[in-house]
Length: 108
Image 1: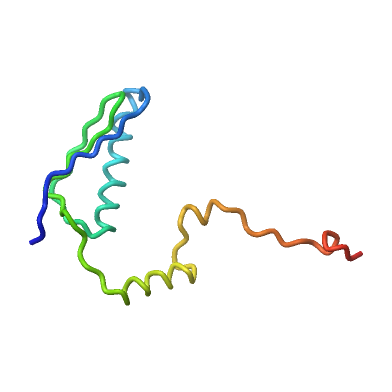
Image 2: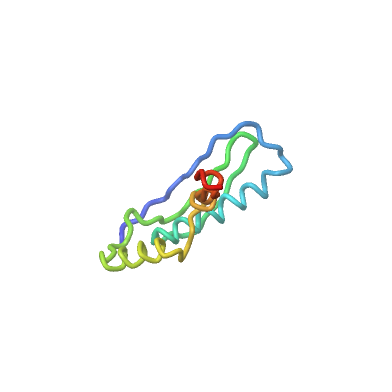
């Protein structure tokens, strides 16, 4: 098994409303765990902590390195992304390229 260590992730914030802490902590935990899994990092229990000025996660037994990938797998993932298999948030946020109308081109 790969080497592992406990990981403490801490996010300092402005004053958060106390009623929102549980929901924010759960959202951070879910997103963080998803990121660990997408990166191929094995881990143990994840314990969230929340205060009005700080959100934190303690990840027990987090792998110190990602598993090796074959270059062909990385190339296939890249090609799927390029072919529209999955758009990143950045791409969805950008407006579609403008197509000039015939009036803009000086025709008519």
